[in-house]
Length: 142
Ligand SMILES: [Zn+2]
Image 1 (cartoon, rainbow, N blue to C red):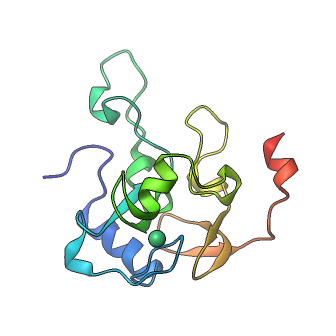
Image 2 (cartoon, rainbow, N blue to C red):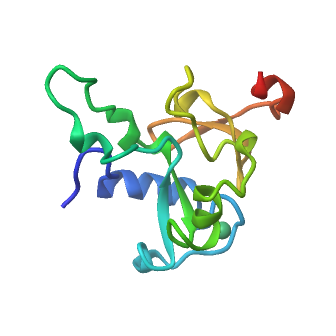
């Protein structure tokens, strides 16, 4: 059972293939069947309190792109362990692109990420990516 904002199996497949079965941050090989135990798909832009399930009439519509491939990267560990834990706990510099601000103007497809396999890229929602120049950290902070 997947809810709004959760990655559907087909999307997890796209992410797994794009990330080469490795953690997108540290590159460690992941054991496919052990998703949820040894690795997980990280939401770059998080779903916030209660996720998109909390959307009510008259409030903002669910942000469907949160469940698409550009918003997900395979990371070792869980929300509290491994690279996923490090990203969640803000131990990974923001400019590496593993987190996308919910209140910023840029969405996940617009924010470059330093991917272990692919280098600096923009991710798309079809499981693809395009190379970009390494962003200037000062420019991103502005
Ligand atoms: Zn890792």
